[in-house]
Structures are given as C-alpha cells and as structure tokens.
Image 1 (cartoon, rainbow, N blue to C red):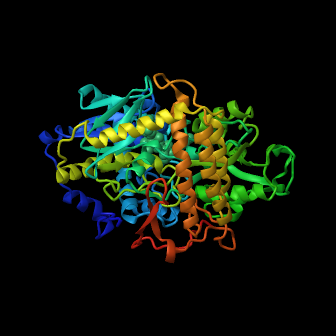
Image 2 (cartoon, rainbow, N blue to C red):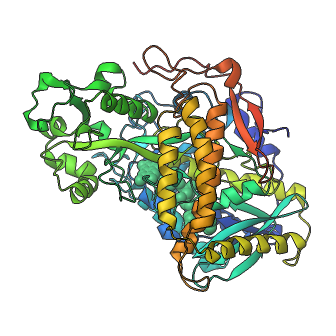
Length: 637
Ligand SMILES: Cc1cc2nc3c(=O)[nH]c(=O)nc-3n(C[C@H](O)[C@H](O)[C@H](O)COP(=O)(O)OP(=O)(O)OC[C@H]3O[C@@H](n4cnc5c(N)ncnc54)[C@H](O)[C@@H]3O)c2cc1C
C-alpha cells in the first residue's frame, strides 16, 4: 500500500489556507442530507460533533460513559498551548511549530504541526467565547505558564482543571446541538466494530452497556475520537475506561496503525504503592514551573528530605540541562528520573521515586500563591499519600500517560479507509515520538473545531456516498463478529479474572516496551504476550450475563484487544532500530545517555496493516521530509 499524506506543498505559512480553499464545499441546504457518526465525546469528538451539528449535518454521537461530560478529557489538569504571545516573551506560530517538531524528535509531519500551531490561537478565542474560565492576570489578559520543551510561557490554564473547563465548553456547544436536533447522543454505547461497504466506512456496530443489545448504525462517514491506549500498561494515569477497542477493530477492518510503539511516560506521577494498585495519579507537569526536582547525592541515603542539607542534594535536571532545567520535555525528564533511581538514589520506600520540592517557591511567593496555582493538585496528593506538600516534598515517578501512536491519517485526518476519520489522541498525527505538555488538548480541539469541519465536507462532496442499508452483508458480518467475541468471552469457564490478565500483560509491556527497550527484551515480550493471550482465552472467567450492566464483560473485550495491540507495539519497537523521543532503545544512545536517532534509515512513519490472525502485519512507510526545522540532535542543555 502507498500512503499519500495529501499534505500541501508550497510555503508552509499559507498551506492550510490554500488547502482549505481547494477543498470542495457542500451547500448549507445539502448538509442536512448527510449522516455522520462521531464515536467519542471528549474534547476531540465533542468539538467535532458540536461543530458538524452547527454546520447542519445530521450527527450521531456515541460514548461509553453515561454522559459526554465524563469523557477522559475531563482529567486534564495543566493547560493548553497556544501561540498568542501575550507575554511578549518571543513566542510565535513558528516557534510553537519549531518546538513541537523538535520536541517530537523529528518524527512528525511538518505540515500538520504547522497547521496545529496556526489554529492554536483560534482555539483560545473559541473557548473564551464559550465562557471557559481561563486564569487571568491582574491586567485582565489571560495568564500563561510554562510547560516542558519550551522557553516561553504559552500554556493557558484554569487552575489544575483545564480539561474539565474546556470539556464543559465543548459539552455546552454539543448540548446546544442536541437541543436543536442536529446531534443525537448515544451514551453508554460501546463501539465494537466498523462497517466497511465497498471499501468505504459506512457505519458501526454498538453494544448497549445497559442491556447488551447489539445495534447497527449506518452513516455517510464515520469519525473516531476515542482517545489513547495508555491503559495497555494496566497502570497508567488514564481513566480506567480508556481503551483501544474502537481503533483496534478499525485496524482489523483495514485502517493502518501508525507508530504504535510511540508511547509517553510522564515524569510526574505519584509512585506505585503496592502490588494490587489499579490506577496511577498524575501530578501535573505545571508543578515543574515552581517545583524543583532532586534526589540525595549519595546512593542509599534514607534520611527524611528535610534532614538532607542543600549541598547533599542533586537537582539533577538543573545540573544536566541548565537551559531548560526542570522544564525539559517529558521523555527526557522520565529517563533522567529512571537513571537516578537505577543508580540507587531513588527515594521513598521502594526507591522508585524522586522529590518534587515546592519549598523554594513557597518561600519566594508565599503559600497562598502556590495554593492559587496548584491547590487542587496538592490536595489530591495529600489525600492519596497522607503527606502535605506544603511541608514535605512530593515524591514522583514516571508512569504511562499518553500515546502518540494511533490510526494513520492523512492531512485531512482521514485514515486509509475512505470515509473513516480519526481525531484527537486516537490518531497518530502531530506529536512525533514525544508529545510536549499541554499539546494534547490543543490537538484534540484543533481537530474537532477547526479541521474536520472543512475536510469531511470535501470527502462527502467528492465521494457522494450512495445509499446503504443496515441489512448490507457487511453490516451483518460485523454484527456476527461482535456477537461472537461477546459470547466467546462469556462462555469461558476458566478461573482467572480479567484484571489479573491485564495486570500481567501490563507488566510485560512496561518491563520490555516501556521507558527503555532493547532487542532481547522485546523478543522476550513477543514470545510472552501470545502465550499469555492464549491462556487468557482458555482460562478467563467473565462473570454475569450479556443482558445486564456488566463491566467485567466490557473490560474483557478491551483486554482482549490490548493483548493484540501490545504485540504490535513490541513489533514496531523491535523494528525501529534507533532511539527517538519516548522510544528509547538502549542499544542506540549518545555517550551522555540521550536518544540517538538514525535519520538515514528511520525518518518515517511506520504504518502497520492487519493481514489476518495467522500472519504478521505488513509495514508501510511514510517518509518524512523536513524543509523548515532541520533534524539535529535534540539538545536542552
Ligand atoms: C491525568 C491526565 C492529565 C492530562 N493533562 C493534560 C493537560 O494538562 N494538557 C494536555 O494538553 N493534555 C493533557 N492530558 C492528555 C489529554 O487529556 C488527552 O490526550 C485528551 O483529553 C484526549 O482527548 P480525546 O478527545 O482524544 O479522547 P478522550 O477524552 O479520551 O475521549 C474519548 C471518547 O471516546 C469514547 N470512546 C472510547 N472508546 C469507545 C468505544 N469503544 N465506544 C464508544 N465510545 C468510546 C469515550 O466514551 C470518550 O467519549 C492529560 C491526560 C491525563 C491522563
């Protein structure tokens, strides 16, 4: 298969405008003739459904929560980037573009990233118009703080609840369209398959989480905005429900999966406390604006942090990266924390932790200012650990957080299946091998509010999808597939819980395809995962019935998909014999221990195509060219 990115050529500053002008339009009266399915009501899906409804399309929007308001986007804490340059500190669209391409270790498509930086400024205006209560400065302008990988302050925030406030904005816009009748909302519906008719995405199969009813929904185009797959690691900062089912089943229907091994491990999470923990909690990167990260200079130093004098502390990020200090990008900060802990200088009972210390900032700014900025995070930390960060430093350790990989999409956000569009964290589009902090919300809203409204019209105008019936053989086959999987899971008579398999799978993936990877470990994982998957299908026990609210059944399906996806991640990581961003192959590093790219051989997007259960997936490469930001060894020193 040949991957055509459809990225415009010509001066990058004008390419999105020129592209938009060349996209076909559908006149307002004709829009209502088209049905569009949007799966997902987080920032990407909610924004898309609201915008398409506003344009006049008939939209059906699905989510598995009881309300669109509960999408995982609500968890986002720290902020959203935009190149507004309110601080007059040297920011610009070009600088945001530059930082993002560099931050992603030169593994993203330049044209997409430039467009993202361009529309970032519109997002803030749109959200302010919706009433999103961004923090403001005394003079009235919106306030900004800094996130990793940038030397300017471009992150807009609403205390530590930015995702929640942005989602409330998108939700209100969505509810308005629901009220007007242009969007029909289907909560508590689980998408289990994609319906492809004559090579085009024409619908989905859903299972009602209330009563297990399987239904067919047909449309002229399908949008997946179903979030990331960080829960493949079992322990992650993601909401427990986050899953890969929708994109994975689309992959099995022919959509290529890009860069599955590009996952993000976030440096500032509350460390794992015990074997049976099922969830990890993020402490927002925003804390690194004021928090200083350190470990004791001497390995094995078990003194309490307050008894370790200043000259016996190692502020290792400030020492190693004087220019960016505590605000180096996440991949770098995570690896540095791991290196400190591996060398015996980790803190806390397990030794898998480093300090994030607010004391200097409290002295400088006062406790009230710190509470104003991070109050809810500090409260959350205290509730979980029983320690008061105003008095003792927080302990943090890296954890799975975000996935840069996802379904391959072209510049129009269309996958390799015509009519199937993928938005937000579910696609692979803009972050390369490492996402910069506060850029996921930006991308989700850019995709939903500002890109898909243009590109989907062009598709519909060109494709003119013919009528298709819910009795189409492709729909029947997809229903049969979803039913078979559900029955197979329910009919198992084994004796292990779904969670016990997920935990074991997660540990294999974390140990071998997590913060550091190597050939031997990946090969080991590639033999362990299929063996465990086989045991899963033989020995899993799913309690309860189909016709009831059954979260054990829901989770079992997700874990079945995680097994297959985990294998693809390891295959991709094995194939990419270089280190870049979050993909750190131990064999490929600089003498200082930084990621060592191989641009001559790996400057491409790796897109994998399903070839049936019995065969290995096929790899197709989309070459990456850099005309503006020339690849160099990333340096934050
Ligand atoms: C703790 C935390 C804090 C974060 N903080 C920030 C931050 O400060 N700034 C930032 O930029 N990013 C942050 N991120 C990342 C960011 O929140 C996410 O990348 C982003 O919100 C994803 O949005 P989305 O719309 O793509 O997906 P989601 O918000 O995950 O929404 C997915 C939607 O798809 C639906 N769905 C999924 N599967 C199915 C299915 N099979 N059937 C039906 N519906 C389905 C769900 O119901 C949901 O509506 C944070 C992430 C975490 C975990």
